[in-house]
Image (cartoon, rainbow, N blue to C red; front, side, top):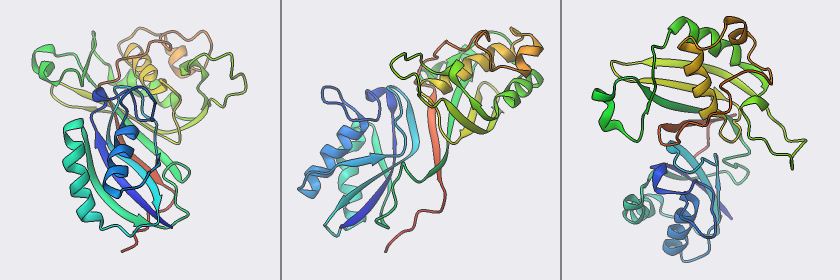
Length: 254
């Protein structure tokens, strides 16, 4: 048995999310279809992150197992010729240790969300940009972002699901930052895990916080059931899975 890793990127609006579903087009579904066709055997893949419908990925990792010895360069080109028009591109393809698993060995992930208050200059970035009103105060952003960092119960940013009363909503956010450019801003999050819709809710909260819509005592202590602006889910297209980090570098077998 051999274990192969694919490093891929994709345009999220072309798919109903990453995870395979029976009746709609997904990244995992299209990838497995192409792999099964070129390898002439059923292929099941594991994904490092289950991105939502419309969310993009610059670096997403997938692994699968097969008995075959694969010429990775040849098959990478073959798969790209099939998948590029669908909105998927394979950046890397290599063999690794059998014990490696793209999801179970994850240390952390970085997501980024693109914002703009300049419709004239950023118009042609649509739909991959979210337009907001007001002026972001960097000092207020830093205060509100710092209060979200660390290990917390992020239930206020999680979907309400009464069927899962014991669901783990604790995440550890290592870093939150704001990159400012002439007509766009990029909010990024580095954490060990993220809940469904959590990033897009946090972005909206940070916009409201940094444009002066919240009192400072709330910014310093945001984890309350009464904290406002934590339920709005922003559009998925401006959200990008930037990268995934592992406990140890993924070993390549030549």
